[in-house]
Length: 440
Image 1: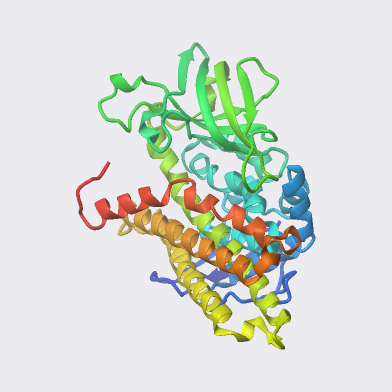
Image 2 (image 1 turned 60 degrees about the horizontal axis):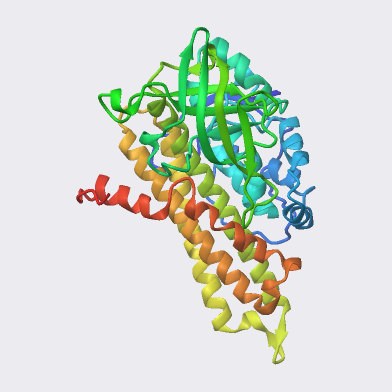
């Protein structure tokens, strides 16, 4: 790791600039951006030096993993270990984790840029999701774990020796997180975990899980937000009391999704993060970060699709001229581009607000939640529009695997659905911002 001189925060968002010194992942790169694709359509004005260097360095790594690599992984369902290894080797897994643990000490703003760049390289949602949880799900651990726990739990994730998955969603509760049923019962110096989780990405390859479980029965708590606890546990698929069932899915098949069953699965008591019963408040710190990261991933997918479409529209000649000369092709793509650019501003504003929230007392949790949820919604919708219009611009060839836009189309549903649906975000904004009666 190479120490870097203090640099200004990017000035484009609404907060004062300040200076800091930190450590960057190696090696150093110039501002000049060079991606695998010869065409760059996203406007880079307003991004700071840190973000541009992240984009440059990660793009260089991703250039070794072209669309053809991801198409094969999508068909075979084989996990992209090579990308994870390459990113870990240069220090990127710990981009938003403390320097003293081997991380880069950067923010979610830079992590969002990293995941957008991975997605935009052609890796799509699958490529980004291969390291997604290692970035956002570790944020609560970095903030609320003891110093000893941080050293034990995070250093080997940063180095790439471990992979982590995130265990929150359950089949019987869905978005009702406060009604989770998976139990963690204290038994001497350990907890016994029993229950079921679903849609757990990377569980087939992970050696650790950040787990949210109930330590106090729901009927015994004063407030619904009480009684849940967060754990960082060994995820030993050979141990008694743990079973996995892989879910066959529509897209992003290079990264597995799973049902996970616990039956008195025993974990040490010192895997508890923070205080028992305070897990929901702790895990929120990671959930807002996840919304920013997934927004970045959606943006990357949308820009990648438009790059494919604009290139095809220039090269495809019908009736003696390129199809891109026709307004019927131009206008839908142009509108999709403007939607992406607007969502980009919302996304990096949200990431910026998140990064400043622990430093600026004027930034409320309400402001962070509204910004992060809004960004996720806007980016997901913009990406969907871009992918759909890109596929249609290709005509019949958009349905062919060799042009890759059909893979992008299948993957663009993920940010619309997860980790919270479009409808729940609109419910949140209607209630928390507009002051309308709760509808559910």
